[in-house]
Amino acid sequence: MELQKVRPADIEKRSFEIITEILGENQPDPAVEHIVKRVIHTTADFEYAENLFISPDAEKSFAEAIQNGGVIITDTKMALSGISKPALAKFGAEVQCFISDPDVAAEAKEREITRAAVCMEKAAKLNRPLIFALGNAPTALVRVCELVKEGTLKPALVIGVPVGFVNVIESKEMLMETDVPKIVARGRKGGSNVAAAICNAMLYHMGGRRGGPAANSPRP
Image (cartoon, one colour):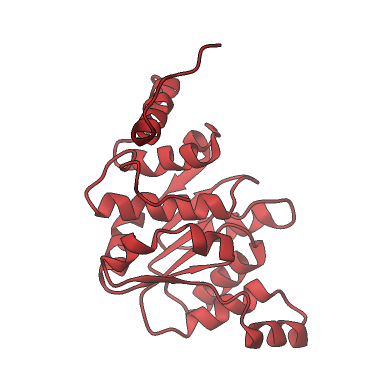
């Protein structure tokens, strides 16, 4: 097999061209293709073209929250590290993860629940627009849904893409039953890299880029 000759600056651009070619007639809705294709680019998994649910108000709500100094809350340090800080800084927004905070660990141990669930409770107390990007812990997503149903949390957007086997599908079904803006990877697939990719896709889009960003842009 002959290697493609691609300049380093063009590798990402060419990757998105290949994704478009492989999708063929099954192109995503133009309104959300930048999200779907970035997730495929991150995972090399074309099933995301079928299993990503993106509510009609998801991206608008995300943009409004970011433009108003919102906070993206992640359930892992991996997702936090993968989300573009320069893109967030342009809008005065930020990303936080409380999973390693000593108070979170202590409370989780005392109550015998996961640190991820306690993280969501801590985030809910922030007086800023909140976006939850959850790619690892179903318990985090379940707690967010519970807080929404209790009326104590009204997130701008919930990205529910935990990966795995125990309560993964169930937690996503709980999110689907809420009326909050949402992006969900239906089924067992997902991950912190997927959560970060979804955030970056929308951040890049806010910056005027469609499809794949310039090769020197941050990416998970």
